[in-house]
Length: 296
Image 1: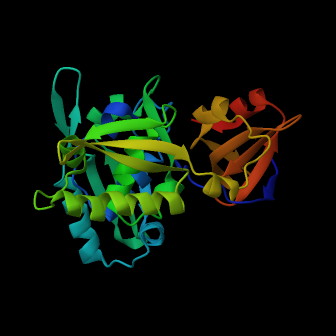
Image 2: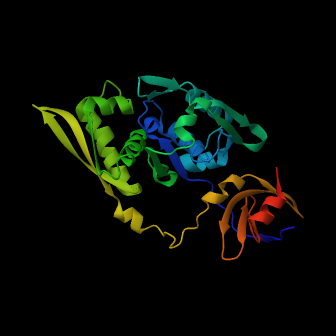
């Protein structure tokens, strides 16, 4: 029986991975709705063959959105998300999906249980090529839904350092109101995103207006690493490789204190360090011992 030692609580997943088609989808969500969806997507283990049921606590949601919500609001919030589909481009046309097949609220525990629509599997699971990866921590501080979308679109082209859109194409992707003249679009979308990314994100952009006659026809984004933000982070010199232990995530071990759910495992010099989801960690000598004490 492994001995439990009080340890640090591990953070939830913060990395979102999406197929590029999903990044370039068309949908009209406000900032809170996008952040809720991305919080769910960040919990996906891309090694899974099927989506799991993902939990979002109301306290966590309030912290991320920096607002307090009552149950009446939360119910309307869930209904609004389910009423806003996304249109995803395909190689032969397009397809319309819903983000979730269900959003369930558990009153006594003040949390949501969500299940992502199974038809989104090709865009979120078993991603081998042309996917976009970013950290949730960079989009949570953004106050504009357009800033979040521009960040996602530019992350896809981060290594190429530039991306060009026609104005009409970008307006359509971002679902900009038709009432916005170009001057509104520039002031309320481009300028806001420009400021928010440089203040909060790992990349920022400079843009150039490309004109056809006197009309701005295209926007060229020059994508740059945000050295100010990155310099303020404290990267680990040796980041442990945990990928080979992903299959054990959420599995349970029977200990003297009952069943404990695995959150994270890392290889140390001569043993495995197992972090549980309840503020404890434990050690086992090797993978064979771990396999023997796992409860299916």
